[in-house]
Length: 314
Image (cartoon, rainbow, N blue to C red; front, top):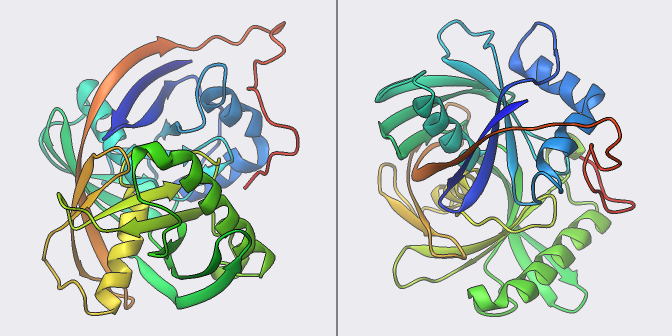
């Protein structure tokens, strides 16, 4: 299996170029459903230890069904499929440029949640125009064991997010263990209280949002696997822009600079969406870090990845 690794503002992506499973025909959404249903071992083997790490996103390149798209891509992580992934979309664009498949300019990618537009600015920088993002619930109040009252919004930016400004401690790199514990407590409480996205979807990401001297805001983002996002989180900042727009705190076309817990940034703007939400565009940088051939020995007891007993699947 041939893969190309990259990182987008610190967050890793592994693009599978060749050697993925045969997913048949149909839309990328159809093939993503088959990947989730029939090939869980494949996904875990690519991004879990000993070949990967919890923070890594996988991006499986497939032929697009839409004729005007340069590629189809299915995103997944250590837990399961992702509908959309902002950092992995930028990483995929930089990887496609590295392969000589695209050059500077506008391109379209078919993803499981719809077609997104990529603008390649240079070998290491791209913008993604995401799917329409929106807020589902405002000011959801929950009582979290060990934290007390926490209030936040539930919003969609390609994945489901709970976004809160109630911080358990300062948003500093040295506090990652405490921030991880707090966000996991919040996520467990949301699930226990029955809060979900549309059609009962699991709210698998939690964002802690705070002030920042160098940007408009700083965040800490809990990912589905329990790892934290090293980047500012593309789908999460898209969901945040939907909340800011709904509250009249950010006007159309005005730039929002979002800083991650490690200090990297995305630059974002939005246009009104057609369904009452917003269509965000985020700009970030990525670099190819490795090209490799993954091998799967039949005698390897960990060929399909190391998994914690009882770990949740999406």
